[in-house]
Amino acid sequence: MALIITDECINCDVCEPACPNQAIHAGTRIYEIDPERCTECVGHFAEPQCQVICPVACIPLDPQRVETRAQLQAKFERLQAPVQEPAANGLKPVP
Ligand code: SF4
Ligand code: SF4
Image (tube, rainbow, N blue to C red):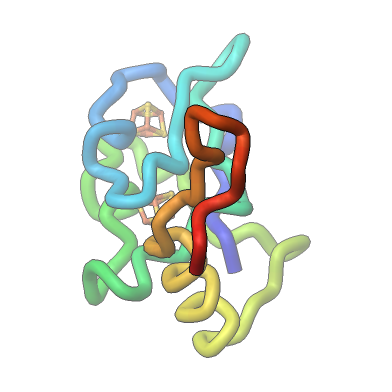
């Protein structure tokens, strides 16, 4: 499950740098979590770092985003994979 930031967020900004997946950013009103990047910290830490650090405890699990530990681990591994950039000459790199 990815986590979600609720309306109680006070925009204190401490969670953004604590996220190992760069999943947290300032939204238009409150901070937001990109569920495609949130692994519940699986692969990095034993506990969700944003939950641990948030002073107002406003980051619950998102019930709309149920994922197994294996799915979270797979997401972590996808996020670690190097981005394949096209070469300057436009040709794809040889695998
Ligand atoms: Fe980032 Fe971990 Fe919080 Fe997900 S649980 S948003 S990966 S700090
Ligand atoms: Fe909002 Fe909590 Fe993040 Fe602070 S730590 S910006 S209150 S979600």
